[in-house]
Every structure is written in C-alpha cells, then in structure tokens.
Amino acid sequence: MLKGIIPPVITPLINNNELDVEGLEKLIEHLIDGGVHGLFLLGTNGEAPSLSYELRKELIAKACDFIDKRVPVFVGITDTSFAGSIEIAQFSKSAGIDAVVVAPPYYMPISQDEMMIYLENLSAALPLPFILYNMPSCTKLHLSIETVKKAKELGALGVKDSSGDMVYLYSLIEEFKDSPDFSILAGTELYIPDVIAHGGHGSVAGGANIFPRVYVDLYEASVKNDLNEIARLRDVVVKLYNTVYNVGGSPMNVTKGIKCSLSIMGICNGYMAHPLREFEGAERELVKQYLEKITK
Image 1 (cartoon, rainbow, N blue to C red):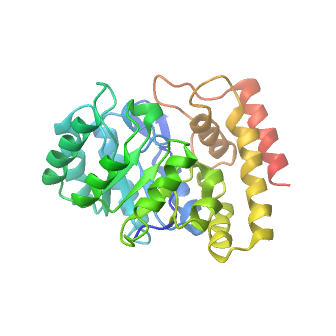
Image 2: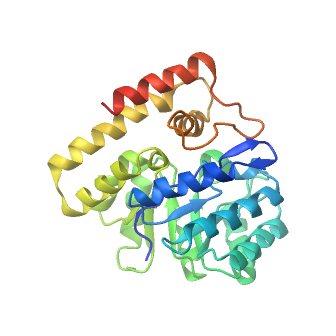
C-alpha cells in the first residue's frame, strides 16, 4: 500500500542535456536520511516533459542505482505520445522501478470517456503497476470520480490528487473508503493533516525535497492526531508557501523555488530545463533569506 511522504523528486541538471549526477546522489541521500516513504521521479517538479527520453532514462537508471531498493520508487511516464509512455515504462521496469505514474496526455484536450479508453489501452500494455495522477492545471483534464473508479478497476494502486480542490479530495476518500488497497495521496502539502484525519494515506509533497524530515514528522503527527505537533510543523509548511513558493512571477514558482533552495543548500545544481529559467540575482538572494528565516 502507498502511504506516507513520497517527494516528487526534482531533476538536478548541469544544462539542458546533462544530468547533475553528483547532485542527484546527494539529493537522494538527503531524502532517504529524512525518512521519506518513497520517491517519485519525473513528475511536475521533476520537469519531465522538458527532458529528452535519453535524459529521462539516465535519471531513472542512476536514481535506481543510488536508491538501491531502500524505498519504493515510482516514475512518471505521461507523454503526448502513447508509444513514448510505453517506452519509458518498459525502461523503468528494466531499471528496477516499482510502479509508474499516469496522468492524462497533456496537449490534446480530451473527454473523460476518452481518458477511460486511453487507460484501458495503456494499462493493458504496461509492464508495471500504475498510479493515477490528477493534475488539471497541467493536463487540461480534471479526472472525474468515475474515471478514477475505472482506473482502479484496471488495477491502479491509488491516485495522487494535485487539483487543490479539497471537496474533490474528500470525495475521493469517501468513494474509496472501503478499498484499503487503493491509496489517496494529496499533492497539496497543507492538506496533509486533513487528508490523514479523513482516511487518506499521505502526500506527494514537493517541499519534502527541501525539508523531508518536517513533512515526515507532520505525517506521523497526523497519524497520531498530535494536534500540538501538527500545528508546529504545519506552521513551517505555511512559511514555505508564503515565502519560497511566492518568489518571482512564474506559474512554476514552486518548482523553481524548490530547485533554487536545494542549490543554496549545496545539494544540487539549480539549472532549470528549457523553457524555465532558474532564479538568479535578487530572486535567488530572496530565497536564501527566506530559507534562513524558516530554519532559525
């Protein structure tokens, strides 16, 4: 069963075609030392659609070597190309990935019915179990409860919801409350205590790249219903939202802020794949100041 804190791992890069291998190893050790329950490669924070297949495969292979089965590993295979998704899934199996993560193809607008048929065809061709990923801001489709039910029928292990819609998230938890083998994971970090309290299972939390132990402790406090500890730790998450995640004017401020933070911390390079640009100058200095205040 999927549960706990599973960071959507950022992809450390030297340039648009070169992986920061040393940074990747340091980041993985940082995350595992922080107690995370699994790792999710090539998600939104991993800049997956901006990377070549060659670079994606190198990341998968290197990450699996560094992780060495210490925690479960998942990889995003979503692509505009059906064949491309299968290609990455097949490579992932050979590298030792535990399951793949599937979101709607993100260029052509599609209907719920088309997504269900897509899942039927994709799941039949996948060499690994899959997790469904609801990310309407990037894919044009907000997965309906019926589509998620269809995914479960096709063998999905669970769903990660990054819609930011709390009512929808509660509806997912209610719909699958009698299916203990189907996990509900929140993408919105502030929802962690509420998700656990209502019967959800954890979070794919971007901020855990920076402060893995904070998020792991918040999850564990939520499981124990330790209200004082929840309040203390959620305050750290709120500070991150109000500072690092709000630097600059890009719709991708969260990803850029996370990668910039890791660069400032000396964990990996801060380069962003095209078309995104890394924080430099005044923006980078602002992130540094915010991190210093949060960690005091």
